[in-house]
Length: 133
Image 1 (cartoon, rainbow, N blue to C red):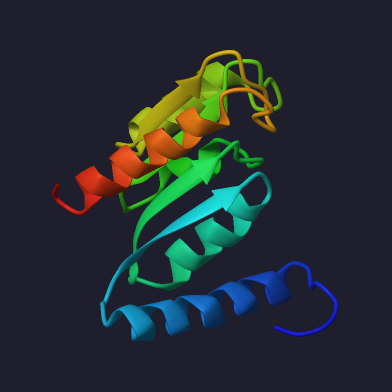
Image 2 (tube, one colour):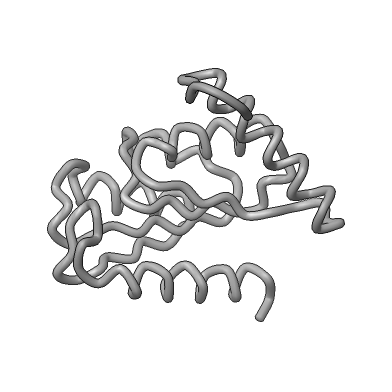
């Protein structure tokens, strides 16, 4: 989109447009969506609205853990060990109930000033498993 960043529904609409372009350009019927912090709300809305979302990777998600329980697609949640914004036990329970994976990055907070490469490696390994590799 052009201009000023939107909020709420506008963010979801922008993400839907980007998803349509990605699906068309890749010539595929499914894709994985990754988000950071509050972007998890947009990723969850996309997954709820579109069966083309074949997986969610939520990095330091800033959402209620209960919103993850009802997911019907592969899920990876990556958090820093020092990130205390979302109660870890509740997050772990919700991810487990959704059948997802929780990756805790040692010596890292919510912004991953340390050990950012581990976030990339965890996401890449999950994507490879998702693709059947």
